[in-house]
Structure formats: C-alpha cells, structure tokens
Length: 204
Image 1 (spheres, rainbow, N blue to C red):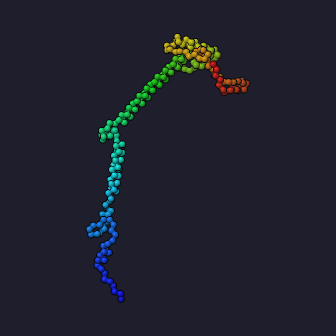
Image 2: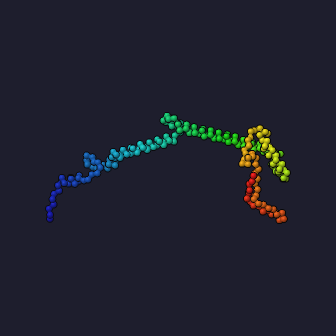
Image 3: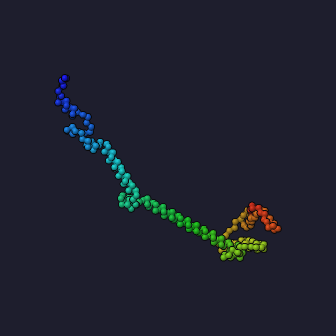
C-alpha cells in the first residue's frame, strides 16, 4: 500500500484563492458582479451625454421652427422680418392684380362702346334690340346698305364726336370691300341638288 504525501496547507489556500478574476474586486478578493455592470468607461459616458445634448438641441430647434412669429419674438426678441417681407409681397401682388384688372376693364369697355358706335354709324336702320335689321333679302337692299356704309365712312371725321383716323391700304384708299365665296358652286333645280367646292376664296 502506497504512502500518501500529507497535504500542504499553504498549497490548499493558494488554489482556493488564486483564480482569474474579472471586473473589480474588494479587499476580500470576492467578485462584485453588480459593480462591474454599473460602472462605465469615461469615453462611453461622454458619448451618452453628448447624444442627450444633441437630442435636446434638435428638440429646441423643432419647437422654435413651429412657433408663431409672436412666440418667436417673445422667445428671442427678434423682429419678424420674414413675416413683414411676405406681407409686403402680398400687398405688391394684390396691387398689381388690381391695376391689371382696372386697365383690362377700361380696354374692354372702350372696345364695346366703339363697336356699338360703329354699328349705329355704318348699318342702316340699325336697331339694338333686334338683329332683324341686319338681314337683307334683295339686291337693292344690299347695294343700298353698301352705299350707305361708304357715305358714312367718308364723312366719319365730320359727323362723329370722337376722333377717328383712316388707315390707307395697299390700293391707296382708306376703304376696301372684302368678299368671301366658295370656289365653285352649282345648283340643279330639277332634282334639288347642290354641287359646292368647300374651299373659301377671299377677294378685295
């Protein structure tokens, strides 16, 4: 039977106490798990503090962005220059629209009044309440109204209240007759048919 070596007390104490320790230890040599998780390195804590400050800055910027001009003035005491500029733009654009509408109204009124004047001057027996006076049915009526319009046109500067001037054309005259007609047309009264070339010719 082999003899056993007696156990050294110092060796037993070294095995029980010598071991790999992670984290922080106190004076007794025991591992403090709670303290290891709670303590953070200094750079990491600095990054967390910087993120909180950046988030707070963004929150303040968004809050200031959605403020009304009065709230911004109360917050920073800055005058609302942008609001004044926008109001000035609105006033200028509104004034331009009003001026354009008034000038356009003047032009339209002038054109309508002149058209009414020319109808009363150049159309014989013109009746404003009825368009029947514009219709002609015989050749004598056509010639009669044409000669009447020519006479009224030649005496325009002497009879009218307003001032009108003549525009002389290529023929050297201030008066010309323009007629439009189909290029070709024929009628067969026997079978009540019309043969018409739809091309419109214009002549003076």
